[in-house]
Length: 486
Ligand code: ADP
Ligand code: GLC
Image: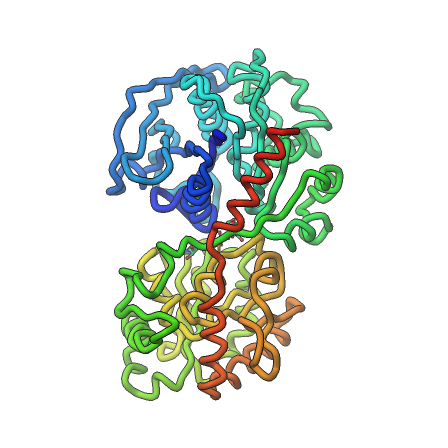
C-alpha cells in the first residue's frame, strides 16, 4: 500500500506543535505495518538551516499560481526515517516563522500554501507514483482533493487516489477572500456552496471536509464535540453532513523521543523502576529557570506546576490568568515555557515579575527545555478551552508528572480521573471551564502530593500507560484499506 502523507510540519525538521510530532511519528509507525509512506512538506528556513542531512534531488517543477508560473525545487531528507521530500521556494518559505508573525498571519498565506499543495501533486505526477492514498492534514493541505481532481492547471486530472483528511485543529480553517481564489487556477464551479464558498469567503477546510473520502480527527471526543456549535467553529453544519465519514483516531507518543529512561535532554535519566533521577531533574529545572533560591531548601516538599504551551486562547490562558492569584497563595512553584499571542507573553512576563521566587517563564520555543519541564515538574497543567488531542499530557504520564487537565477533547479521552481514594486514575480532571473547578482540582492535587506513597502510586500507574503509535497506526491502515477496497 502506497501512501503520500502531505503535511506542513514534521518533527524534527520544522514544527510549531503537535502537528509536527504526528508527522514525525505516524508515518514511521505505518512503515512498521508495511505501509509504504512518502512525506512531503515545505522547506522552511529551519529546514534549510537545520542540521538534519538533506540534498537537492535536482527535480524542478513548474507550478502555476494564478497568472504566475513558479519553479519548485525538490529536496530530500538523507536520514533513516520514511522518505521525506521538501518543496523549496525561498520566496515563500525562507522566513523567520512558519505561518505568522506574533500578531498577524503572513499576507500571502493562501498563495504560499496553494503553491505548496500544487507542488506536492506535481511531484506525485512527476514520480508517476501510484499512490493508493493521499493523506492531507489541516487547512494548509485542504485543497489537495481539488488539485488531485482538477490538476494543478485546473484543466482536469481525474484522481485515482483516495484522500484522507485529518483535522488537527478546526479553529484554523484557511479562510480567505474570494479575490484570492484565482491563485488556485481551479474552475469557478469550485467556488460554490457545495464546495469552497462559505459566507462569501473561501474556506479551504470546508472543501476538504466535503471532497475527501474520509475525514479523521485526533480523538473520539473531539470528533463528537465538533458536531456542536460550541466546538464546530461554524463548520458544525458541514460536519453533520459528512458525519458518516468522520472518525476520531487518537494520537500516540513516540517513545523513542519521549522516554525519561533515555532522554538526552535530562540532567538524570529515570524510569518507573527507579524514580530517583526525577528529583535531580526537578532540582535542575528550578535552577535553570532561575528559581535558584528554591534549590536546596524545602524544594522536594514543594510541588512544581509545569506548563509547556502555545500561548493562545485555545490553551486556557484566560482561565489561568483568573486563577493565578489564588494558585500563588499555595506553596508551589510554577514553571512555564511557551510563545504565542503577544497579550499572553506580556502577561506571563508580568507574572514572573510579580512572583519572582515562585513563578518563572521562558518565552520562546525550546525543545530541550520542554523535555526538562516534563521531567522536572510534579504537576503538568493543561487547562485548554478545547483540545483536539493534546500530546503533553501523554508525555507527562510517561515522565511521572501528573497531568491536571480540563475534560475536553483528547484530554478527556486519554486521562482517567483520579479516584478520591487515589487507587485508580491517572490525572486530575476538571469538568467545567471555570476558575472554581480548576482550583478545586488543584486542591485535590496538592492534598495528594502531601501523601507521598499515594502520589507515587499514581505516578507509576501513569508511567505504565501505553500510548505508543502502534494501535492508532493500525486504525489508519485499516481505514486506508477500507477506502481502497470500497
Ligand atoms: P498543540 O499542537 O495544540 O500545540 P499538542 O499538545 O498536541 O498541542 O503538542 C504540542 C507540542 O509542541 C508538544 O510536543 C510540546 O512539547 C511542543 N511545544 C509547545 N510549545 C513549545 C515551546 N514553547 N517550546 C518547545 N516545545 C513546545
Ligand atoms: C493540534 C491540536 C492538538 C493536537 C495536535 C496534533 O495542534 O491543537 O490538540 O494534539 O494538533 O494532532
